[in-house]
Image (cartoon, rainbow, N blue to C red; front, side):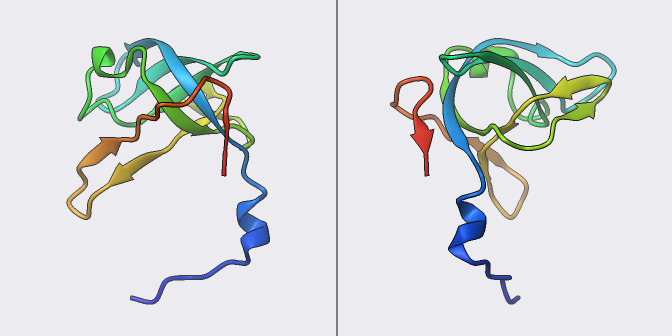
Length: 109
């Protein structure tokens, strides 16, 4: 399989920041969705993450992770998601959280 390649200028368009998960709850009537309240230091945002089939809410609380913060906001299951959680995924679909030891609000690039 040949990977598509992009100019590095495309990468710089994405704003990624460290956020700390302060609240996590299951989205009713869904199997995979978790609603997260994330603190980015200067603001708090709601993020919908499709990892609830592999992680419990308590697994995310207090974790500092990387989020893309300048994507178009999207309604998922009727809830507006204001950022996207970055995770790792194996070929078999197993998702891994990427936790970081950096202060909330740190810009990632």
